[in-house]
Amino acid sequence: MNKPKQTLVVAFTLFSLFFGAGNLILPPYLGVQAGANWHWVALGFALTAVVIPILGILAHAKLQGSMFDFAKKVSPLFSTIYCALLYGIAVFLAAPRTASVTHELAVAPFFNTATFITSCIYFGTVFLFVINRSRLLSLIGKYLTPLIVIILFIIIGLGVLRGSAEMVLTPVSTPFSLITLGVFEGYQTFDAIAGVVVGAVIVLSLKTYDVGNFQTKKQLISQAGFLAGFGLFVIYAGLIICGYLLQNRIPDNASRTEVLISLSQLTLGKIGATFLSVLVALACFTTAVGIITGASDYVSGLYRDSRKAYILTAIIASLIGVVVGSFKVGFIITIALPVLMFIYPITIVLILLHVLPQKFASALVFKAVVLITFLFSIPDFLKFIVPIGSLQGIINSIPLATQNLGWVLPALLVFLLLNFRNFTTKAISNQS
Image 1: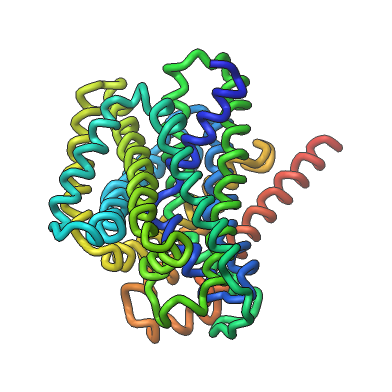
Image 2: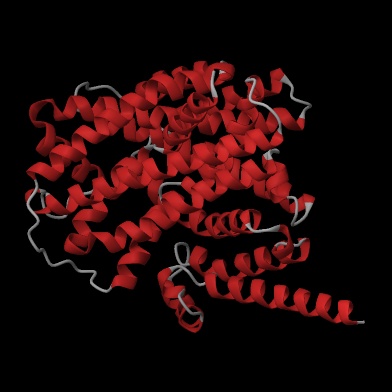
């Protein structure tokens, strides 16, 4: 396979592994909520659903190691705990949600079957793909992703042509609040988590291909990451615009899934449900494959790349998917929110530190910034568990905490102070 073709296949694979349940149902809903100010929510959504995930891919291109290597600069113990949490969230929440969305949007409109039956068939098929991981890039990158992209462009194109850009007042009006709305919804895509999980999958998958040395792989993964990121942004922006243009024809107070269903029907007519079913099934399926493959790779690596450990992990993860995937999408999203508010900030910080030049990201910087991020994200996590009134004083005292971003400024301040300290120490040392 020549290099341009390799890059394109990997880019398609990355796009498909990222583009799952949340990536479909969230953008149109944001467009409906933001109205004429859709560009602000698109910016916020792009930050957490495009920029951060692709930076995660670039970090893996730089490391070309396992998930354990991704966090071990803080400490080996932290990395072990972090990997267990990350893969736990991915296997217990992210992957099952894809089955739940598939049932509600692709199966239930046509067949009166139980969600458990859908989950069994769904994860049985996912398992077959996972145990044939040597063909993962080819199957997903060459065949499944192009079909997903074609259907998406048809829906977006027709939505733009048939929509009317009427000014509609929305309850959220200021640019900053709209950006933070987009950022918060971007959390629900799980894509920052997917960035570090999928990045590890791609690195290991490329070992089965004749790609070349470390630098060649780095260049290939980086270029594919940028291409996938551009594709994701175009699709997200298109879906958000469609939500805005068609909002006056979508029922009031429609849920995220109801907005997507309405969008498909308004753009594709009677066959909209069929096209949407195919799109949802493919998009969710490829994401589930990526998640379970990543978890199986990680556990296998703990046991010297044991094939038995890989298959056993894939079986357990698929069985968990069958059980949790039988619940409704709304329930899974509700359960996921506090967990995401806890793990997402730490993941974002790790990604950003890895893509920076090493002179700005020493081991001390990693330790201190991650610790501060963890401490200042605790209120964001707790507000979904305990009564908000008991936390109001703390939240009001932390800048941006009311927007669920209380960790941002403290982490940035610690990062700048430590690097200033390192710079002045080196300057004094050079003078002496």
